Amino acid sequence: MGVIKLVKRMDFHPVAWGLLMGTFLSRIGFYMTIPFLGIYLGKVKGIDPAAVGAILAVSFLAGTLCSFVGGALSDKLGRYPVLLSSMAAWSLVFIGFALADETWLYFVLSGLNGLFRSVFEPTARALLADVTPVERRSDVFNARYFTINIGGAIGPLIGLKLGAGGSSPLIPFIVSACIFALYAVLLALFMLTFKHREQEKAASVPMKQMVQIVFKDKVFLYLLLGNTFVVGAYSHLDTTLSQFIGHDRIETYSLLFIMNTLTVLVFQYPLARLMKRFSALTSLKAGCFLFGLGLFGFGIFDHVLLLILSMVVFTIGEIISFVTGDVLIGEIAPPHLRGAYFGASGFAFIGQSVCAWVGGLLLQTLGFGNGPLIFFILMLLTFIAFPFFRKGQQLREHRQAADEVNGITA
Figure 1 (cartoon, one colour):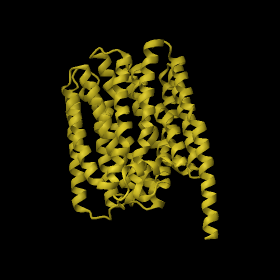
Figure 2 (spheres, one colour):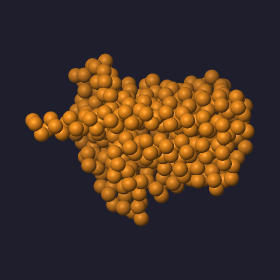
Figure 3 (cartoon, helix red, strand yellow):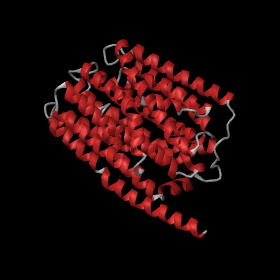
Figure 4 (cartoon, one colour):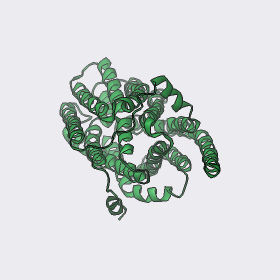
């Protein structure tokens, strides 16, 4: 019933529809290959868990270092040139994954995967905000997240059928590359067909000044610091958990991945309505708490039903945190610097990079038999986000109060 209500509200700009369609396609391509990469590198290529964690972490690290530049360039050059070039190059990375046979090549390709993803994603989110009225942004970002997770449900199933995670990953990666190339074509068609008002350019704002403006925004800064630990928690789904469960129970891991998606489809709309009753930063704190609980459950439970329950808790935290975070950034950012803000939000991916590496180290050091201790440590790392979100909430409330006073006296 919630899905039907959500669909009825999806009267978005045609460009937004194009982005949602492309998001659906690209997530199918992404999830049919990348979540199984850690399993493939460990089981087939014989790479040790710490090195696998490092390879996966490189993707997050490269994304962290480049996301601000990509978002800022989209403010200066326009969204479409950045979107098209990054998506076309990203498709070539998947061909590289299919053909690589050396450990160092996987490091390079993982880095490029993170780079192009971090350039494309904030630009796409900024364009989505550009063409959507303020009062509809919550709906459009919920729709985007909805399509991401439908793709996440379909992708792993196709990947398993095509041999992802097995001894012959060639076909899944080639199919993924073709899907990404198709998205690039769709972007070109929408760019040529629909003439919408471009976002206000920031060409007059030097890059150095853009950095100063963004990172002097203390509300955004505390949000970014808190999100570093939240996205770090999410990274364990594709990295630590894939190794911990997938090394001897790949079917169970695939089931959990699918349950992650199904939970989003069932709970997203009710949660979106519920979270409107609370401030954005309060919602982020709730999401962080549930992320941590879900992680701990992965370590202490062995029965598949209890693992599924842990995944449901984990995914509810995911829904609350990620949708709320995008809406909040859209509210905080000035229109002409929206790409820079969304790009700067990618610095939170340092949490993914570090946590993926830490998870691999914990598995190698403590062993696969110490799940409760490993995931307890990961839960505590997640909870470090709380004081940052609390401080950001206090500063935003003070800012809003000051704006109201200024508005009255003006």
